Structure formats: structure tokens, C-alpha cells
Image (cartoon, rainbow, N blue to C red; front, side, top):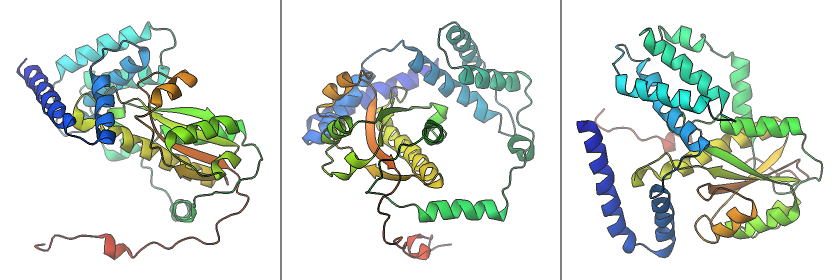
Amino acid sequence: MKEKLKNYLKIIYYQWVGRIRGIMLPTPYKQEYDYFENLRGEKYDDLAYKEAYLRRQTHQIDKILTFSKVKKMEAIEKSVRINCEAIKQCPGHDNATITWCNEVLSGYENRQGYKTAEEMLHNDKYDDKAIETLCNIIESRRSIRSYKQAAISETEIHKILKAGLWAPTGCNRQTIEYLILTSTDDIEYCQRIAGEGYAFPREAPLALVILVDPRNYPLPNHRHMAYLEGGAAIQNILLMAHALGIGSCWLFWNGTHRNSSGFHKKYNLAPWLLPVSMVCLGYAKIPPLCIPKRKDLLKSIHKNPKV
């Protein structure tokens, strides 16, 4: 009870401090602030919100099973069981979430935890060739700004989108969604909303708008997580596309908080979905001349002078 009251007072504090600061902000920052405040001011009862909340709760139990001493979390365990059963009754629920939830609950019920790192990770250690391949994919990836009109297969698109979903999200909330654009008109429209004026995206046979559902981040100082999780998904997308021989370019999105209502209505998107970026995809017509070198690693490392 004391912990719930403490969290409630913390939310009230952040809300009032945020409102006072919000009045003094420049317009772009105020639009962002208003966007997140409006999200927090609503109550949600849709399945996607409930599933993300269940994953967030289940993660609290999941992580304690990696501790040397498993703490008791009866209140959260009870809530997880109730929410899990409720979601199982909803048509179209996510089976993967329910399966993971039950696995975690089983581990907690037996108080067994995860015995060793080897058992948990199946002793996965990749050989030198696999590591070298990964390094080559990371280091040879470039932004592509000239595309052939050849279509990308459904299988390849599926692999690229799935890679984005496997990027880490806070407490396994799994906030990432996509809007897939295949027509020049749609790409041009989204470019206008995003504030991107280049012509080359309209050459691409495919573009993605990366969307994030930030509703399960209740505090004002959590809002940056939407952008971080979007960026993590985009990195996976770019690397998988490159591994498949498909070019890509990560585009800016400056129109998140202005003219966004028209964007959401046009594509029948829930108003809480936050667009964070566009990514163009297609086979390269004119590849970049060379790979830009990175600065010396040692120049990026800061050490404690007292050590």
C-alpha cells in the first residue's frame, strides 16, 4: 500500500512540474509535451494496451528469476495470473505473449529460477566466422539513395520487419508497429508530414513508417523511450536489409506533433501511435562510391582519471 501511494504521489509531482515547465517551452517542445500528456490523460482498454501491460508485469517476475535469491512477488504474480487469463478470453490475443507469461509463472511457482547461464542461453557462443560476418554487415552498411524498381519479395519483407520486432524494448513491452508504403503518392505524402524534401525516397519500391505505442510509459521522464525503441528497431531493420542485399535509408521524421491528425486518419491509425522515422528500402541502382571511415576508437573512450 505504501509503495502504491509513493508511486501515485510521484506521478502527481511529475504532472504538475511538467505542466509548469510546459507553459514556458518553445512551440516544438510544447507540442511534444502536449502529445504525451494527452496520452497519459486517457484510460485505455484495448487488447494491445493490455498485452503490453501484461508483458511489462511479467518482466518484473522474469528478471527476479535471474537473481541469486528469488524474491517474493505475490501481488504482481496474482495480477499477472488474472490479466493473463483475461487476455486469453479476448479474440485475436497474442499467443506468444500468453506462452511466455505461463513459462515465467511456472518458473516462479517452482522457485527454481534460471540455474546457470549455460542452461539459460544454451551455451550459445558463435564461432569466429559468424562474428566476422556480423562485423562485416555492420561495417559495410551504407545509406542507399538510388533504387531499382525491382520488387522486394514478401519473404524478404517479412524477415526485415521481424528483425525490427526483435529489437529490445523496455520490460519487453514490444511497442513497435509499422505502416508499409508501396505507392509513390503515399511515400510523398508521408515525406511532407515528416519534413523530408528529397526526391530519392519516391524511387524506392517500399518505405516503412516506424510507429511506437508509448502508452505504457506513464511518467513524463519516460517519453524518450519511444524514440530509443524506435531507433533500436530501425537499426535491426537496416542490418537485416543489408544482409539480404537490399539497400535502405533511414529518414528524418520532424512532423510527429504537427499535422499528425491528418496522417493518422488517412491511414486509419490509432491516435496514440507515434511515428518516429521513415525507412526506404530497395535494391541499389547506384551504390555509394566508398565506405566512410570511422574515427579512432580510442578517441571515443573516456576513462576515469582516478583509476
